[in-house]
Image (cartoon, rainbow, N blue to C red; front, side, top):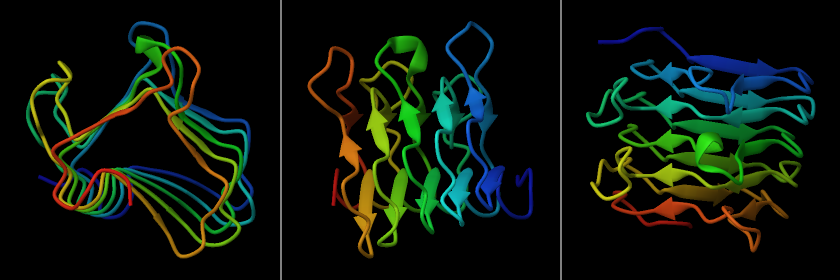
Length: 168
């Protein structure tokens, strides 16, 4: 099953201040079964975008893998100051079962992004492994000054069961 031949949701060319999903009941999306990444945020410094309350790489029950062939979420090419998740259970993304990494941050200008409060590599219960094939959160190719988790209440990601490490 492939729902799109490329990416499920793509924000690029400076796209800013958008919300994918949300914290209200029913606001989240199921972004799964795509032939590439589930969500791609890239090119020309897209900033201020928020991705919350989504199921990425699983079916609508968040208990069975329905992988995106690539990464669950990929930020690159200058993606800055975007928020993936948040600080409450309603903001949590469940990013699991994908063909590559759960979240990939790459390129030197990709900075200041926050990855917080998510389940990465787990089912909706947070206790059953549904691994991403690659790394849970992969920071690569010069991406810098991004925040994974944090000290605020609800900022911790639960990253477990992935095929090639938790955070690399």
